[in-house]
Length: 261
Image (cartoon, rainbow, N blue to C red; front, side, top):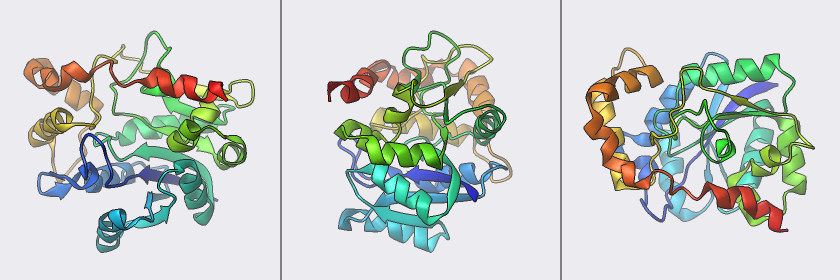
């Protein structure tokens, strides 16, 4: 049995089509995400889970050319895609990463896995994004999202989740049903950074991310959350690049969707 990080990535994006293969410092954004996640010591394998549609042939080809394991599955039912990718890799523990998080932090992911293994959890997530919407403090910047959960929990969700939103977003059925699953959060001990947006959904996000990569990227070592925070202390102008989108992610819809069934 293995600990497998599954990165969901596809070319289709309403606001920023083809974003996963947009170039940052002469390499596709997806390459940077895979490279960063691979630096997590407790991850045995990294897999890109894309769709089997012709539109995502570019993602499949990119993976093939760069020695990256790839699984192609249902485009709309991402929960099914994740389940079958995990099943194909005989995964016991799954790490979920999305293809719009180019600052995926191996140190934070490592802490997440450690907390999952030492606690009694079915699912534990980094305190950011939709899953942390109602937490009042200790949240990480949006874009450092990562989740760690058991194959058993994923399989139960795969069998039972019926709402389209739960199938699209993979894990809400798990972390919303605390009476069924044992749920935890990795909190940010340094403070609350929910006012920072480091995910990529539009052009402004991509420009912000590119600026940070230009300032911090090195072939020798991976820059981490603390490095970005230190940079932004002296560059408040970078934070302003996508500030108009903060708080408009519609995470409430993800929470409420499955309750309407």
